Length: 160
Length: 238
Image 1 (tube, each protein chain N blue to C red):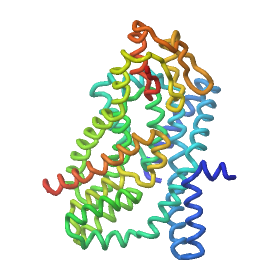
Image 2 (tube, each protein chain N blue to C red; image 1 turned 90 degrees about the horizontal axis):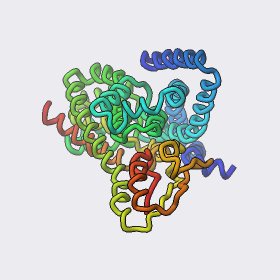
Image 3 (cartoon, rainbow over the protein chains, first blue to last red; image 1 turned 45 degrees about the vertical axis):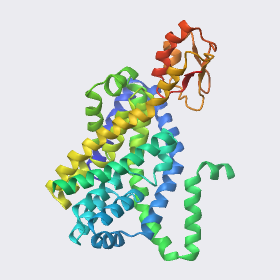
Image 4 (cartoon, one colour; image 1 turned 135 degrees about the horizontal axis):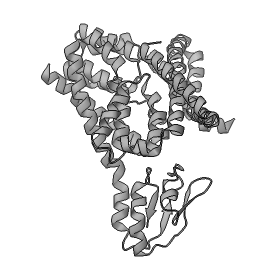
């Protein structure tokens, strides 16, 4: 557990105790709400996580590294953005991975595109986002994020 | 059983895919399971607290506070606190969903919701530390600056796209038959309309309902702020 997750646990525990002292029944009401939210989302999240494992089994990180490391800047950036949009890799795996394909010869622009779409665009989490905010919101947020991620990447190429 | 399968389409699909894979390519299936188990562990570490926090926000933080901090009149405070909240968070992007829906239901602006979601995803502090370690300080700082600008633009555009509809309703409302309606599919039971305009709306078990259906021109003027204020744009005058 990293320090941020840990501190989130501590903060929640403290707030929960304060809430308990202030009003027991309201606290339990909010717990019930949390349970309801969880049961609403659990099925989808579980399915998504299983799907991510599947995607990563077919496109292993080593493969991503070799493809992005050898492609030219434009193709690499485009591919990086696409792969980033499809997969969902935790940050502490993604950065060493991006670092390694930069070492393998990929451009920094490719790395920036990959990291930005990886985190901001969620192809697999799209169904969940749709459920929570509606299809219009989910569609536009992901589409615009993808385009802006490419612009950010190209901007970085320009500056660096 | 079928009901469960239909309700959990993604889950059913994944399980089916695994099932087929176990018979055709058992090696890949095992790798996939190993990969997934890591993410499932991550989920159990983060989701319970995120949900408890969202529920606590829902019960304890008054709607006025949320509107003041993240609502349409929050000014520069809105984006600032949205970036702060997103940056100091932990966990993957789906962990941000319950927090954001709670804030959204309580009157936060679309652009601020987008800022929280995006900064939660791309520029949070734990990520920046990693980025610095593996890609260097210059890379991190420049990407951070450009991404913040991009997120602000994204929030602005999203606000325009999502808000556009009630404005069209407003423009066309004068000549038509002037029936007041609440779309039950969109309503989230926030009861904002029923509290502020009890003459026109009551809360029913599933959603808010319009009490007066045919509006006089004078009443339309009174009700327009309700149309605009509804956080999910469920109220319409046709």
